[in-house]
Length: 285
Image (cartoon, rainbow, N blue to C red; front, top):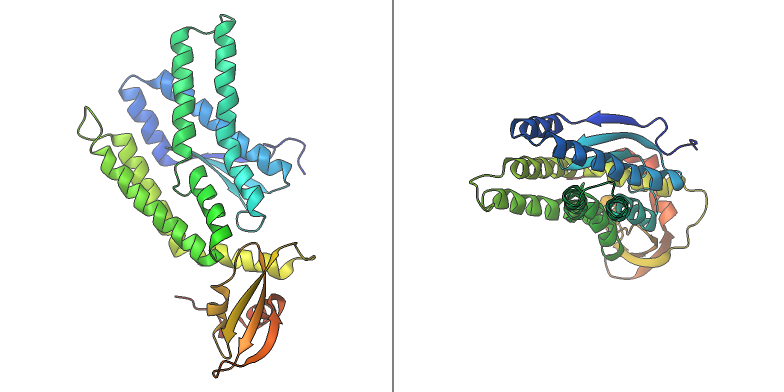
């Protein structure tokens, strides 16, 4: 593990972030956007620090027009509890930054006007990132919570469907913003979020495959709740995996076309067949 959470983490800036910077300078709000830039950095360091505590591999940190996204290898391959904690670590940092602003104001280091703006900036980033839209923190929490209730592959699909629908609501709201015809930054952000989820949905099989690989290569049995699943003889493995939960151990009851129980099969047997004979099971729709 690195000595410091941010050691070796590459910081990247999305082109749309530069567009927001340009619009801010053009409208005379450079100081305000610089402050938000610093808040976004601190927000992402919250994620990076929490990930570092759990021993996750953090490759880079991308600054986006709505905030930032830390590129972490472990999403979908670790416990849901860890995913929720890491996702909420960024918003949590805004709470103590608000408390710090009160402290600075009480010590006479900040004016009341600047304290109010600083608090408003923290609340803006905090609540926006808690929206249940992937890859915002709220969207990651949404996916983690859904994984408790429904099988993991449908969980990923529904996360992106809900996120695209809510991105559309944000886009509509950008045209209904009080006092102006179009709120351009919100319009750009909503379009970006919609396209990001569309892309992730097209590649969701990669996330699910990483999940299966983790289960396949694990060295010890996790204390999961046992999930009994009924499958028919000759049923494609892809249909079997569509019934897998993220944090449950599966025992499959194999039944004949006539409904008779033929065998009880542990999930390891299906994983072994899946990865040793991929040509017979790949090619999902």
